[in-house]
Image (cartoon, rainbow, N blue to C red; front, side, top):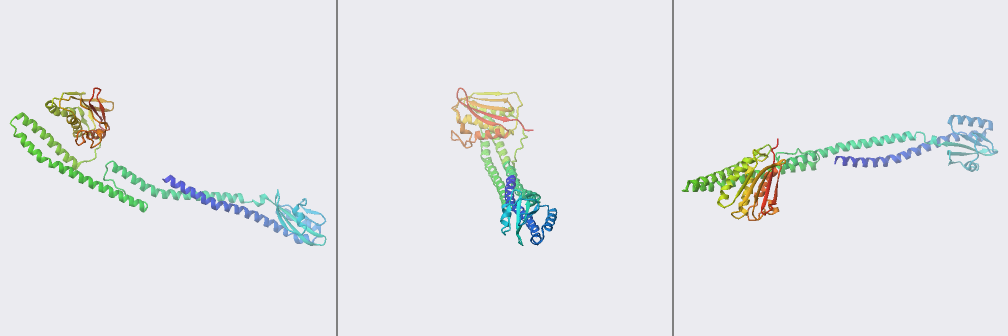
Length: 424
């Protein structure tokens, strides 16, 4: 924008300079020609009295003196054909002046000035002088150079003023862009210092108001999530009491442990909703330990539903750039999909291995498969919330990885979660 404004001002300045200086340059040249012509005419007219009354010798001396002073050729044509002063042949203008008419004519040598002198006893004499082109254009080149320099200076001044004005526009716009990018990167405390023209100041104020409103809405949303999560504590307490009343100690311990895990998840959700800050990417979690722990949790349910579990974990540790609770939630989402969308008795496999710059977590089953658009938030094939795969995708993307959907060669779904390494 700054360059375009400068280019626009430069173009307008050049047009203005051309519109004013070109006619002025032509006027200067015309004035110089007229000034030289008037000076030559005055010199020639100063001889009219001598030519009209003096004898040839006196006329010759006067003409020679004028030629020496002016540097121009001056000739006097007497009625009897005698030519005094600079030698010259009678031109058509001289012949016309011999009839009593003074005039000016253009020739190849310059501008010819002829003056008819009447009153001599022997007829009409003619005074002729020629103004060379060099005399008519004397000083014009220098004047044109001064005008050209003046035009360049005016254009440069216009560019300097335009650049200064452009900076007053570009700097606030650049600040608006920088603050908008900071807001997009979750720096919700970023604000604009309104500057520049009134319109830009108004836009800056609107952006600050928008950022403040976004903060308010996020706070309200987090409080609502925290409140909803807190409401789960009552049914969890009732479930714990029911578990403790079971007669089988093993079942009671197992259900109580599950309730404890769910309560910890709810507590973590409340804490995350109320005090959540943007992740700095410096977290490191051992994927092997987290995946092994979650598979062990789901293996109990797999045994109850007759599902064979094939677990293949690479030797650890395998650090990934995902918080442990988010990685656990992603693993739970993938395994939960297997139990939710495949019939009882369907086997599944879990593999974890390094691949390139990522750690690949693959969950494959022998079920009916999964649609490619199921990763879209809210999409579901079985009437569920449709958030499971989206949770896994977001965890992978937060670490610099991605989520891939595919099918096993023998049928069934295969979901691969590529997890990035911890950032330094």
